[in-house]
Picture 1 (tube, helix red, strand yellow):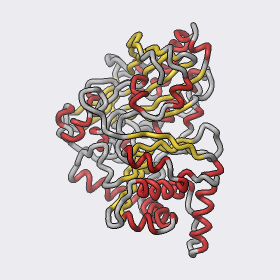
Picture 2 (cartoon, rainbow, N blue to C red):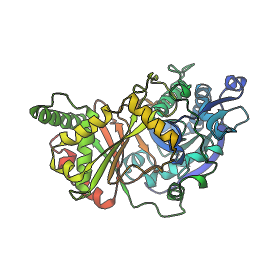
Picture 3 (tube, rainbow, N blue to C red):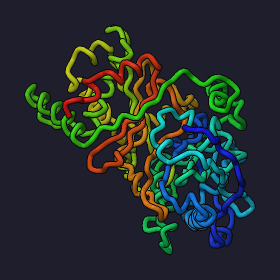
Length: 452
């Protein structure tokens, strides 16, 4: 981005409206689906909006409207206004009462930076100043707000940077909150789809953890928290957004399914399975992996409809699990894409309620807090989803120009999928890779699907 830098103007806190205070203190136990994320970092999302009136004298009005809407949204999503706590037995919970500060809101200005510059930016390190809580572990939610927002006035718009404590919610819950907040800012008197807050309905085992401060987290995660806050050199990664238009997505899926059908596989692959196989093959090529080297494909799968009984789409919390597929790189590279797609499909389909319960029971017997990059060797790990309606987050000045993930929780092979701004079935693929591999991926015509 061009010069100017970001200047902090003010830091304030927003509490839920009076009704939440009248309800008194409320607590909800963190469950097995939540706890593994304590040693991850806050989950960061950046939304950038083009609006001349926002950039002009209207910025203060916009800040006021966003704060007012946030207070109303936190009436329903009150857990985001609370803190993490441990009860007398060492079980983590999220608690809220009116004595707590609420969500943190920073206002800032970068008036020489244009929306177009931010939208065109590839590397998240340059976007870092627009996002709060860089390098902050979720465990710090014992002492910090669980939601932090930075509103930055740009030359011709506004950037809304959010940091969510990942031990409290997953991507589905994040975007449910964001669309609800935006709905209220557009003038709705109440949100149209309230959250389902009873997370113990999904799992009610009490797990005691000996974690009280960041230094109790695994040493590798603890040291990693310095990577993004200037105390140590950031990892040598490059990030890039590859935009796949609807035509390319359709051709990737059609080509793969036609070949699979010709080979006798009558069950069609989904868009996600097809694109994931396409990415896995291409990244393995770019890494120049030897045939005998292992490679892992990891997807953070939504378990709301997989658990027994199923949970509603509005379930607020984490209801995801990582699903791993391991094979030799030579098999991914020498076989057509439907081989990799078949492995991914098999792993996803076998992750039913019995598999989820088994995973939970094993973890509860030996609760290991993983670091954010424990996804496996030569890994491709997919987070976010093109099903998230990120371009529906309209606060009253139109849809965002771009939606990005921050620098937290990134490692070599991390992939975020978002719907494309052009709509339809277009998908943006945000990838972090070793610079040498990224250079090869950028030149890979098969990956870029140049005939689309």
